[in-house]
Structures are given as C-alpha cells and as structure tokens.
Image: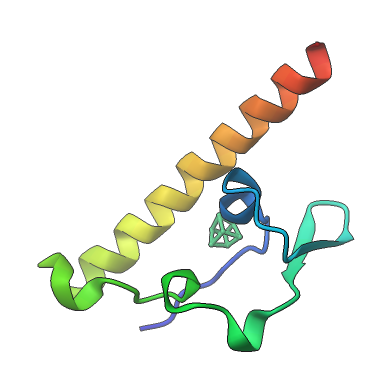
Length: 81
Ligand code: SF4
C-alpha cells in the first residue's frame, strides 16, 4: 500500500510539531523522519481500524485534504488579525 504524501506539512503544523522544517514555499520535511514515532507513520492503527487497506488509504487522503483546508483557514485567520 503506497501513500503519496504531498509534504504540505499541514498535519504536523496543526499539532505544533517542533520537528517540521520548511524546505521551500509550501514544501516541508520532517527532521526526524527516519526515527519518527509509530503514530506518524502511514499505516498506524490500520490493524485495529476494521478498515480494508483500500478504505484506510482513501480515508487518509480524505483526511489530508481536510487538514490542508483547516491549516489554510488558520493561516487566513492569523493573517487577518
Ligand atoms: S497533511 Fe497529508 S499530505 Fe500533508 S504532510 Fe500531512 S500526510 Fe503529507
């Protein structure tokens, strides 16, 4: 099962992760990528989710989309204040 992360950093930004580094406009990297915790790895919780791999993958992409929208909304709110 292959997950294509866009490296937008939205998921990490929203939890205030201190290991996120901006590489270029809208493009981030994780400073501890190789030793990141299980909960940051794709597939975490799949075994207890009751979802098929396909459902888990689809839900992951759907979640990323929502996280990106939420992160943009927060950025817009911060900029307007
Ligand atoms: S929100 Fe999704 S696409 Fe963006 S960095 Fe996180 S996992 Fe990758």
